[in-house]
Image (cartoon, rainbow, N blue to C red; front, top):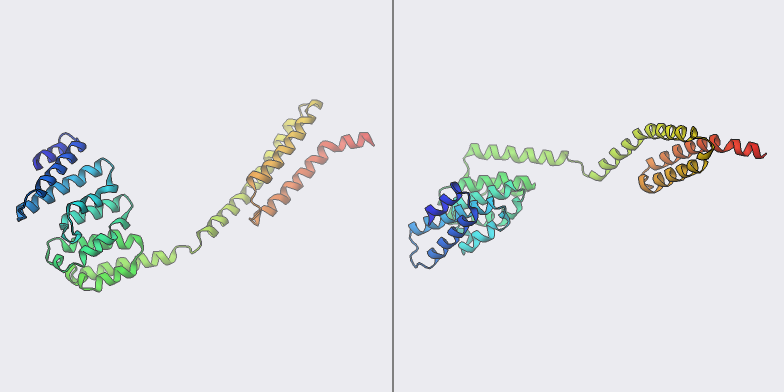
Length: 268
């Protein structure tokens, strides 16, 4: 069954069938009373292929819960499977999913003697704690008994440098991203004012040359521009809005005088 599942994944690319085969294989192992090392290897093999099949099916959300169903105690999960889960959830941008499970696994004393313990600790540090910004916990992990069992002195120094670099990045990040966005929006609106003026003048000239029958169109044009700018494009909460309104009113007054002054003159 294990060979069949591997063939279904690598040769036939039939991931649904591969996962079903792994699931049936795990149920068969669960019905056996023997818990020797060979059964444990088969169990780990089915889980590894099952994880790959779920990832290929884009069903990675259920990977950790499925693995935990196979191992009653998460401390007993093999190191290779922990490594796969950490890398999988890191790749899909959800490292927090593995934080608690990996922490419990690493702090289990019996796992310190397991081959691959150091790799799990390294992946947990670099792909879970550091991306999440948990630099204090990362420091504690490095200097704790877990770090002493997992890392050499050179590895500890390299890990601390990674943590320090992450802390510097956190300090350089703006404390108020909204203020930066507001500043960028203000500068963008200020740069658009000359373009808006040119556009309004161009449209006015186009309407003016259309003859005496264009008088209603000119009124509609002015009303539409005023309503659009005041209700759709301007945010009264921004300081730049006052400059926009001032410029707009000045331009509209000029256009009003140019369009309607002759009518008032004739009336007088």
